[in-house]
Image (cartoon, rainbow, N blue to C red):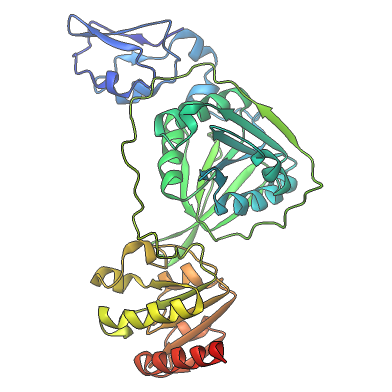
Length: 402
């Protein structure tokens, strides 16, 4: 059954045509019409209609929970979206699986992983070893690279079929695009950029910083399902893979495939390929306003090169244009957990500390002995970063050469 359109009150704006994922809507004499055989009753056009003349078909109304997201109590299991890069899951996927497995066990549910890909290979086994109880696999050439429309359509069909109680998505570039799209399609809520998770019964407690990082707010979604949230990378640690672990793999065939309305022409990285991403670095050399100017960041680059690490910075230096935003550490940047984190000339605002305070070892260098950064530092040096930094580089080079 397709959606229904009140053609007497349709104003012919064609807004619904642009939002339909399957191209089921078209115009006749200035009024919107629907191809009943193509419509999948997803409801995407309903909220977009400016005059509210589109409504759900009878079949969708009869199964209201699958479209409008009202919780029925029948939903079960926690899902993790498996984002891939170069044919392998990104690191945050393993972080989320470890935490989701804990929440699932605590609530008596299963930990599921949703993999949309061109070729699954041995990825399902890796996901099971990392904590997944069930892996839902959808394969096809259209999933070789991330595509908002195709991924949203497939994911929503899986939701309607298996009705999970909650979905966790990594707060990456693609995750921040896909998560809200699914939430809007399923008419449910989404808590963005979570830094902590808990569960009581089947209700997930999503915790995220609010008011500029000055407070932590815990968000509940009790009336809608699935509950959804994006979680920052590096917040949780992945579990040690258990190669003896067993799980279930469900290969699912999408019933209502859509026409891909977008084609990727070019995909270029936003940073130089020679620069190490701070997400992956085991050592990060970060600088703040105490570095004085952009030219002095060359010393940080030199130290990072000697240590085999990456350069980071506070929001202040990003705003000044001394480094690019992909290297920003903090509340409005990236959360990192390297083995060693150097903080040169960084005072340590609450927002910055939220992005690096879980590093294994924190070494702070600052002229102000009362700087907040020293409260979280394992080792601290009260002094001018521009004086300490050259000596540190020279000392490390001497040790490495000896």
